Length: 104
Image (cartoon, rainbow, N blue to C red):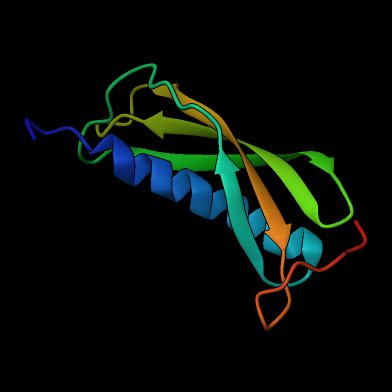
C-alpha cells in the first residue's frame, strides 16, 4: 500500500534465508522452531533490491540459531541501508519429520 513492501513478506524471506543456511549446514531438511522479534528501521519501497545475510550464531545437537540481516538498495541505486534483522532457530529433521542430530 502506498508503494511500500508488506513487512510480512520481508519477514518470510528472512526466515527462508535462515532455512536455506540451516539446510546447508545440517545437510538436509530443517523446520523453523522460532523467529525473534523484527523491528524495521525504515520502510521498504517497491523496487528496493534486498540482500539477506546469514550468520550461524550457535549450533546444538539438532538445532541451529541463525542471525539474518536484511539490507536494501533504494530503487534509484543511490543508498544502501540496513532494513531489519532477526534471529531464527531451526531444527534438523529426517524424511519422516522427526528431529535428527547433525554434525556442524
